[in-house]
Amino acid sequence: MHHKVDILGTQVSSIRSADLLAAFKTFIQQKQFIQVAITPANSILAAYKNKAVQNLYNISDYVLCDGVPVRWAAAFLNTPIVERITGLDLLPDLVAFAAKENFSLFLLGASPGVGERLKEVILQQYPNCNIVGIYVPPFMPVFDATENKKMVEAVNAAQADIVLVSLTAPKQDIWIADNKSSLHPAIYIGIGGAFEVMAGIAKRAPKWMHGAGLEWFYRLIQEPKRMYRRYLIEAPVFIPLVIRQKIFNRSK
Image (tube, rainbow, N blue to C red):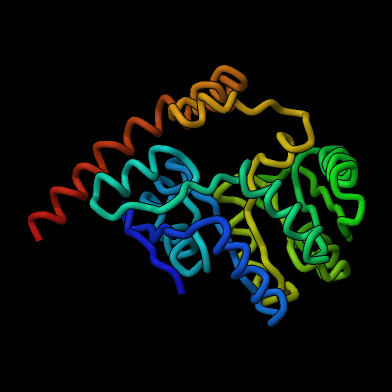
């Protein structure tokens, strides 16, 4: 068990990366099904607006703090989170962990060609890393029964220890939860857009921007059409809601 903090009704994990990976090792050895969601502020807002999504996060085994606003909110609510764990940071750590422990990986999602490129990059760094499968579904707002069956069968045929799902949040998290009863036991992680970054297809902000909390601004400049809604429409709503939560907590 690990500590979680309530941010707008979503229970966000407070855990260090090293402890998370140590727990993964135990879960894999015990052949447990573990769901890991990585939640920036927009995912917490989606959960706030949709109780089905919020329930999905709250029954997930880990809901990681992805984003400075989420960590700020936790501190503001007097329930600080010990470490921010983004998908961009977790993916290379997971790859190194899998190579060291001889755990296998499956890459699900992203755009055509990204998985193959990521595999090449991983094997250049870790020649012994065992990537047992790649599957790229066609883009669909919701996967139909035929495509969903193909995805589940591809994952199950590979029997990977860690399944990395890159379908954007919360879509990737919903897919894992909806198919839990059909999928083989493994660590399932909604990893977001980290495939493209580690594969060298997309650039990450300079390190100084990470520490300054400006990574969002770099992403907005890189992909304005995709990111403007998240950062310019949804994000400003997050702060007043957190302030309201603090006032409500005090009144209780």
